[in-house]
Length: 126
Image 1 (spheres, one colour):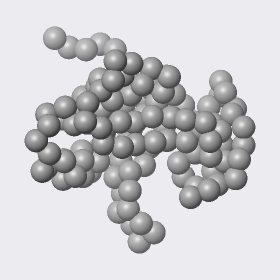
Image 2 (cartoon, helix red, strand yellow):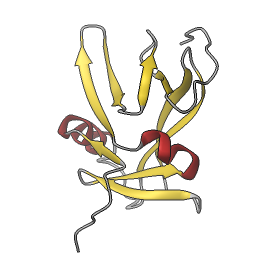
Image 3 (cartoon, one colour):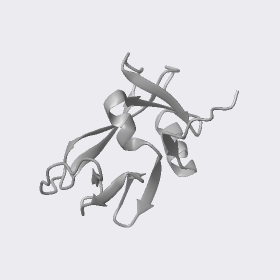
Image 4 (cartoon, one colour):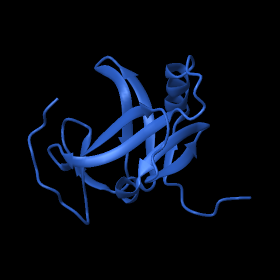
């Protein structure tokens, strides 16, 4: 069966490889990456990610590049079409989100604004 719906979220090969490396000792087959959006940051929204033991009843359970991804119902529309990458540079290493819904962002790199909801601007805090 081929899914004809647009891709909600994708993981680059580098992100999937890093996640497999982080969970290689894990015996729980339900371990996945939780990706969410919450109010905050200098542009109105911030991304959050964490490893999760299992989805909740409110989650959309996705599979991206062989990795389980859990996204709550409120975040899914803000993440539609996004890609998660893992980068390792001289400035540091970490997961980044390339979000086509973001109309602007700020210097801290994990905050964004959409065309539909400008959010409330705040200063960057790490």
